[in-house]
Length: 409
Image 1 (cartoon, rainbow, N blue to C red):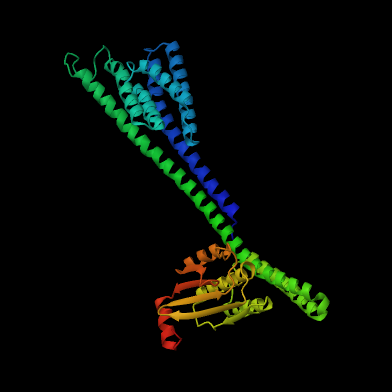
Image 2 (cartoon, rainbow, N blue to C red):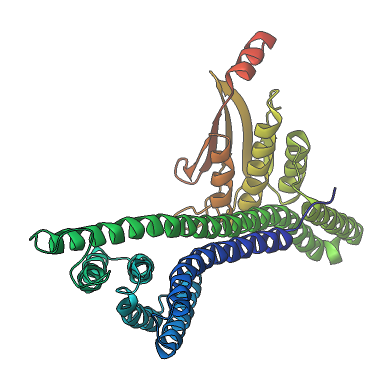
């Protein structure tokens, strides 16, 4: 089974999102067509029994077509993140005109109610929702009271005073219920849209973090190797006339360092490269001594692999900063255990400048150290000294094993 690329995963997510968009559109359209068919069937029935004129039939069918077209435009605009107010107004005009068909059959009340149930959630404000619901109920109440053979006959004796308020109340409650149902269905689409946007943002964030991690690794790799190359090259230039053999040897070291840097970059491109602590200590000592800095190192204790890798990166960047940002003649690197923590200290005696800045690479190192729960501090140590200190707590099981094995604490 192949591994999908980021572009393929995004394309797959976009296809699924578009498929859900079409499914939502068809679901709302199907419910609309179903509601339009019901008064349409009543319309044809009235025309067949001769109680409806042909001109009225044509006008009603045209009104239904116009209402359905406006509804489709409202739905498409909503699914693409915009409110088509012209379609909302056009649908309201069509629904208001079709309300004149309600005296012929009570099913025509579904058209204005369904328009209100669609328009109110699209406008997304309580004020407009209340105005649409109440306005629809007020508009439809006279037509609803006229259903039947004579005016003011609406499931009750028109002589009673409560007929009109009752009709208005039932229509308003019906509109409110359908608006709530539609708003809930639309909210489901909004949640799906937000989830899709959140997945896209997380994917972009993951790519950005990976790029930052890779750039930080590349900085650490090349900074160390290029510093060695610069030191060796300067030394070879000074020795070119007085000691050509030493100069050739230094340039051979430059060639070896350049090839090593190329191998490390290739390894970093292939994947995350773990740095070995023992090898890094030996390499850093050789680089510092070649630059004229006497280096003392303390053999590291047995530590978990992830902590050893982080400490190796810190030692590499610290040595690079000693060469680039100081005039040190002595450097000491110690790794000791204190209680349930491991402590790395790198000190030198050659602070350059007023503030003793040890280089911008320490920012990336601090992030690496925080990943394993540690803390990095850097600053002056005495008048001309600089101290880089890293404290990383050990997992409980590893600390117990170190105590039992007799490691120094």
